[in-house]
Length: 80
Image 1 (cartoon, rainbow, N blue to C red):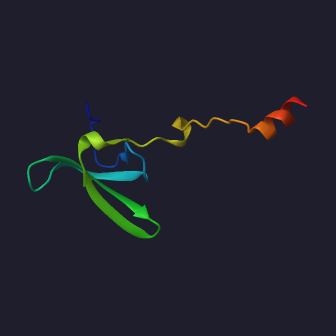
Image 2: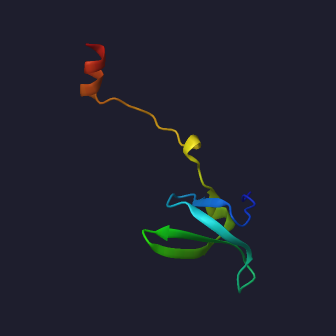
Image 3: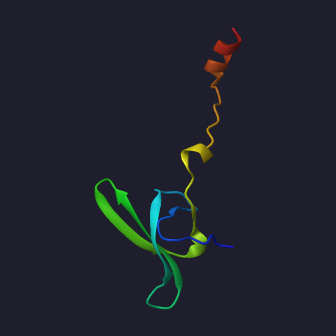
């Protein structure tokens, strides 16, 4: 089931990519439900429409998990 977005929400493609701002949720000129988003690529404003099933709420910094995996060289330094 696709997330119900509203204008102003932060979204991201499920496959990754930049955080985008949802501008409109509605139908395109062909009557298909779409999520319209805008984002910046450096200083260039970009916009596109996406199928609702291809976007998800953007992860906030507190939701991003980072796992430290020491390299073998670092691992031996930790046990010495």
